[in-house]
Image 1 (cartoon, rainbow, N blue to C red):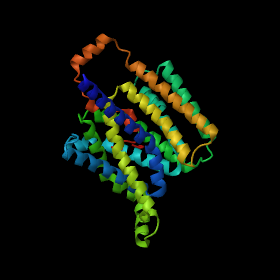
Image 2 (cartoon, rainbow, N blue to C red):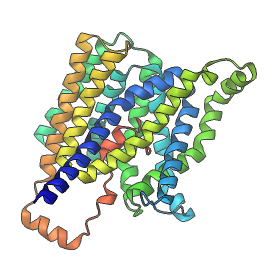
Image 3 (cartoon, helix red, strand yellow):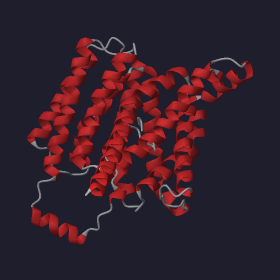
Image 4 (cartoon, rainbow, N blue to C red):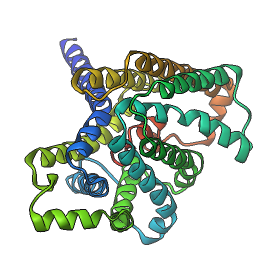
Length: 350
């Protein structure tokens, strides 16, 4: 009896540790990325370092036997390349949005994604129109976002241009790319490994297109700029480490708790991000802007509830028949929560 109680307590502690670890990583990720891009002002190099850390981390942990990922194959890489290109663009625009705007503005743009995905699904993929509850939640998200933008004292054309570019790329990834990748049969860590390795291969293209390599060479030649500052090194390293940690804790927590509990944790994380940002960062929205942001997040909570309700609508008989036909593999559960945090093995966020 004592042994059973000890095992139960041990399992509870392990599960709680995973959930707390995921909550901390998820809620801190956007703030840490903002800190990193402020101190290390080279977005293309920063994202490349994050890709390298995640890809190398998965490979090393795989060699040590802590996880299993699909091996790299050329044919699979060719099929995965469109997803990697869009993902790379999403992370790059995400980083530049954080470079020019505050964390709340990033959350507002990210919260608008469900509305664009619903429109794209209905218009291009001929999916059914959203339910009344879903439509109401999308209106709340839109209203909160409009209110925030109208009172955003930090509004700049550059910031909102990167914001709309991020919206387009992340919506494209959710509507089309995600479904393409699901058909490749990769497990979760294989998805992370391919995503980051292929993105790392494409990183030099962004260095050249943005002209960032000129700034880097100039900083190296003059030994100036924030490229060699200890604070910049610490900020970039912290961002890379948290990117890998959020992958581990995110996937582990998803398996350890129910889907509902994981969704609730994700919602709490968003509010924690806002709270942490207000407490430790001076670059945040005003009081009315924060109210509009909370309204937008509340619309997001309502949206998740409406989608969850629609997903669980089929009868128990249909569910039982499905279980007979479809093998269950939790390892292939790619959630929107991962994309929301920019998981490259990271996210964003992406």
